[in-house]
Image 1 (spheres, each protein chain N blue to C red):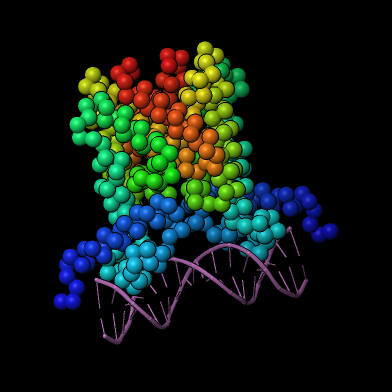
Image 2: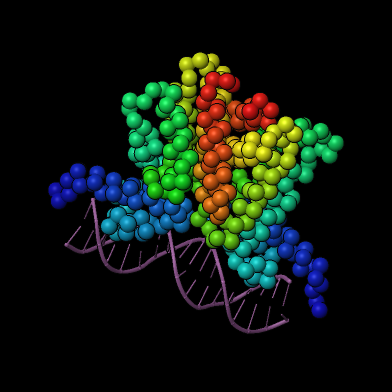
Length: 195
Length: 195
DNA sequence: GTCTATAGAAAGATAGAC
DNA sequence: GTCTATCTTTCTATAGAC
């Protein structure tokens, strides 16, 4: 057997890494399979040994981006529960994130064309979104009751993801900063217990 | 002159109407010039007598959608200032809006591929966003000081637009409703003066 | 598993007749 | 201004050699 299982796995990972980077930067339709494979130092034909279709790799990229997100993985382990959220919100709503200098959140950067893509892709996006809301919810103060926790975690999710999506579409740095800072202030306020 | 100026204007309006509907429903890349012109009961070749390029018509569609939005135009004129926002937020975060049974907000439905499109398109999106924030800002309570007004208007904008964008990408009606209702509750709360 | 070659379809934009 | 016809490019996906 000329190619080991590890080799195939490595190729798959390379393609996925390229997929996350390129799809996040240029969107679903502006990346071709050829672009993808060239970035991964392979050729077009090999693609279909790893993925069924372009939508398939997009779906897998959403999952990979979520799993490998620095935004979550880089949260210091020794933070108190109430510090986790402010750390997370602060890095999520940073210029570094919007300009993709750190690994991008798929919910903000891969929302492009999810709503018009195959049901399977929407399902994947939905799962990742549920995980996102859960992360927020788990780190809200203990004083929050069930309803508060539910309401606030959903709203914070929409607020921060929405800010990054909109921020990317703006061509004015000042307005973008205003948006990020304002959202950060309100998101922080919502994590307090004065709801 | 076989074609009057009014005739050209009418054709342009028809194309724009089709552009808003199709781009909002299917996204920039999933609509061809041919689709557009067929929907407007014209043929491909005539397109370039009205618009420079596909990006051009997309830009004009963003403007047209903003100007013709029922979400703004249908706000009853006799509402008190503090009722305007709750009316607007409520219709914006409705299922009818997400499922496009009423005229869709370009900031939510045309955000697709704006961030990867030409600078002119981003500039147009930015202008419309500024108008959106201004609308919120103008209808916040008089008690708000300048900083509060600025912060809250930006955050509410990101919250409601983000909710609709994400809501569209979800394939689960229950989660979508949870998101819309939660965002509505928090947006309403932010319009109060207890900031 | 990866390569080259290519089939087959679609799209943006232009040319020229009316 | 609108039409038909077409140029040119690009893309997904497949076929077959190694």
